[in-house]
Every structure is written in structure tokens, then in C-alpha cells.
Amino acid sequence: MIWPLLATASAFRNFDQKWAKNVFWAFCAFYGFAFAIGSESQGSDIVRYVASYQSLHGVEVNLISYIQESQRADYFSNVIAIILSRFTDSQPMLTLVYGIIFGFFFSRNIWYILERLEGKLLPVTIILLICFFLVNPIWRINGVRMWTATHIFLYGLLPFLCEGKKKGVLISAASILVHFSFILPVTVLMAYVFLGNRLTIYYAFFISTFFIAEIDITTFNEYVERFLPEPFVDRSESYRREGAVEQYREAEMEGRWYANWYRPALGYAIMGFLSILYFRSRTFFDDNRVWMNLFCFTLLFYGVASLMSSIPSGQRFLILANLCALALIILYLQNQPRERFMQQYIYITLPLLLLFIIVSIRTGLYFTGATTVLGNPIIAILTAGSDISLNDVMRMIL
Image (cartoon, rainbow, N blue to C red):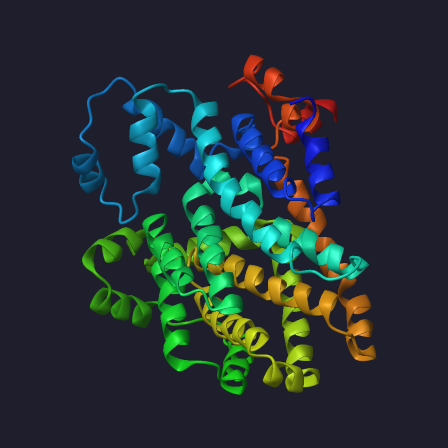
């Protein structure tokens, strides 16, 4: 209540305490309430969500009819917008709800890993944990549907793979209700359940996808339109059309070099880690089924995500793939003895990881308000809806 950011730092420092993850969850809610939409973020999804939600305030709406007319195959944002708009049209209240929901799954996924780390945290573990935190951080509520679905899927996936909890599959499948595109990760999960652990095959598939430049968008569209249910076909059309592919590539080329390379830098680092685990720790995985489950699914899904990355918005699946891979790498490096080759690779990959961390934090400034860093809930109430982003603060100063 006095300084949420400091409380969050204390929660991570004392991550083995029962209260820690709930303190971080509370910070996520506070972040949502103090969420700032910067001047350079006007084209982001959150602007559209807020406008749609505010247009519903004071208007009689039938929930079922509205969802049908919106032609969306996912219901998460519609249900929240309609219910909340019965009471208010406040943007901070909407993003507060987003922060509460996103923060619950986000905090649980981070602590799922933290609670399974043994001994004093190694420097490389801390760096990789920061990467895990920044792959899909709290400011991703700016595109709340896709990124909440990502954490929901992971929330069900990890207990299923690591503990054999079958209800985890149902939780992961529920991510489709939050964002329709998660029919792909759920399909891959079903394929993994059917195929089982095939480490060599999955690794060969994973490596081969890094050398495939792109998939044929016309052929891809034919398969989508033939096999997917009609609501999903209609909803995904804007992502699949051939003109969008060219626009997406042109937009990529216009960015600064670090904006174009910080995500691939993490991907290359992860590819190296996974390759070392495959070639140097094969015996360990053969003897430990739980580790083998997570390794095999990670390789399979990472390969699929790499193939999808040549499609507009397809790169978003690499976020989930990176989360799965980092979970495996963090647990292995912290809990298992490392050989010299792995130790040397850690030093080599450090610049790539640092590039990802620095640019990711810089990106977060577009949605992080000054109240989030220096304020508290009381100040946030007084400044609700008028907070400016740290990026805008920096622009005014510089």
C-alpha cells in the first residue's frame, strides 16, 4: 500500500515465502489500474479494447447477441467489457481487471519454476529468470487476449508435463476461449499426447525449421479453410491474407536494428541451449521421464512456432515456445551439475540475453506510468486515467 514496486522486489527476494507470489499478483493488479497508454502506443490493441468497452456503457446489450454479431471466436474481452460497462466506463477499471486476471496466471507460472529451484540461485539462473519474466510481462495486457491465453496455456501445460496432472490439458484447452488462435498450441499438445516422447524426431524437426525460410501462404490458407471450423476461418482471415504478409515484412525492415534483433537473439541463445542438452545430456533425459516430457514438447512446439513465424502474427507463438524452453533450461541449469561445455556456452550467449533484457525493458516504458514506479494505490486513485508513460516522461525531459 505504501510502495508496491518495493514490495514486489521483496517478494522476489523472498520467493520461498508463501505470501510472495500473492504480493506480486497484487502488484500486477496495481500495474493494471495505473496502466498508461503512451503517445506512441495509440495504434495498440488496448486503445481499441478501451474504446469498444466505453461505447457499451449506458447501452442495453444482449451478451449472446453481441458476441455473435462481433464474429469473434473468443469471448474473453467481450464478456469482460459488457459486464464491466454496466457499472463504469473507466479505463483504469478495465485495465485493473485485465491486470488481476493476467497477473494470476503470470505469477503462478513464475512461481511454478521458482518453487522447484534447489539451492542458492546461480547468476545464470537469475539472468534466465529475468528473460522468462520479460518474454510475456505484465505490460502485455496492452494485447490482453493473446498474452493472457499464453499464460493460461502454460499454467495448465507445466503441471501436466511435469506432474502428470491430466486436468492441465483442460486448462490449456480453455485458452482457446481467450484467443481463438490457441487452437494451434492445443492441437500440438493433442498431437504430443498421441505421439508421446520421440526426442530424436522432435529435435530433428526443431532444427530443420530454423533453415526453412517460409511456408507457402497460399497452401497454408487452403488447409486452414478446408479443416478449421468456419468461425475460426473468418476470424483469422486478416492474419492470413497474402497482402498482409508483405506489409508485415516491410514493417519489420523499417525498425531499428535492436528492435528487429532482440527477439531473434533470445531465440538463437535458446536454440544453442536446447542443442547442448540434446547432445550432451541425452542419458539424463532418457533416465528422467518428467524432464523428457518437457523437453520433447518444447522441441515439438518450438518447431511448429518457427514454421508459423513467416505468417503475419505467427511470430507470436514463439513467445509461448520461448517460455516452455526457458522453463526447461532454468530448471536444468539450477538443479543439475553443469559440464564445462555448457559453462563456456553460457559466457558466449550472455550478450544475446542482455540485449533481449535491455530492449524488452525499454519496450515496457511505453505502458508503464510514473505512478507504477514511484506511487501507490492512493496516488493511483487520484491520478486515475491521467497517468503518462515513462517513455513520454523521458521524451519531455530529453
